[in-house]
Image 1 (cartoon, helix red, strand yellow):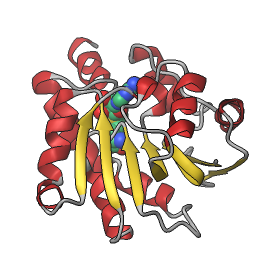
Image 2 (cartoon, rainbow, N blue to C red):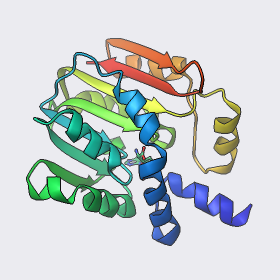
Image 3 (cartoon, rainbow, N blue to C red):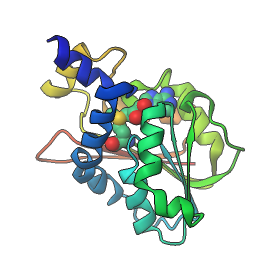
Image 4 (cartoon, helix red, strand yellow):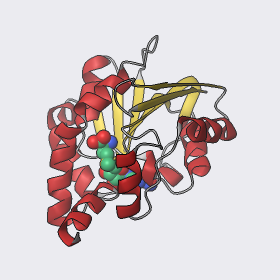
Length: 207
Ligand SMILES: C[S@@+](CC[C@H](N)C(=O)[O-])C[C@H]1O[C@@H](n2cnc3c(N)ncnc32)[C@H](O)[C@@H]1O
């Protein structure tokens, strides 16, 4: 279990050599899940997007493709993830469309009402205190803004629960748990969807 445990624990906060391998892998490995999650963003045309727990930055790049007029800010608390996300989005950063910042979702380094859309792919499992972090997302969204959460675990599947035991501090949430935490943080309308063929979960909250 030693090396495998060390490697999968890099999903929480990638660091060092194993962390660099992990962020490279996540950029490709999470693409289909993230694209399915983004397909739930109907009727959304954001001018400003924040991609939280951005990892290697592939989903930030995809969001900029989908919303060509939007400015994108990507945030992660791992220096390894920030470095990779900057490399992935080098051209967009040079063009002034994208910035990548190091920070913790528990205390977001943004003014209130900064963004039309916030996204979180495969990351809320690790957030410290869901309601506190969701209240931070709520704070930085504009009125009417949307918050998209997308997880490959629906909180009940065997694989998710197995990883929960191996990865320190990981918690796989159900749709009901995410909905309750979003509502407690102030989100008014919350919708959820689970893929029929996989335990993938998307939750969208509206401010
Ligand atoms: C499993 S990776 C997912 C990365 C990317 N979203 C993707 O789908 O490929 C989780 C990421 O969330 C980041 N993360 C976890 N907790 C965080 C927190 N409290 N604040 C900021 N980033 C966090 C980790 O550093 C890591 O890069």
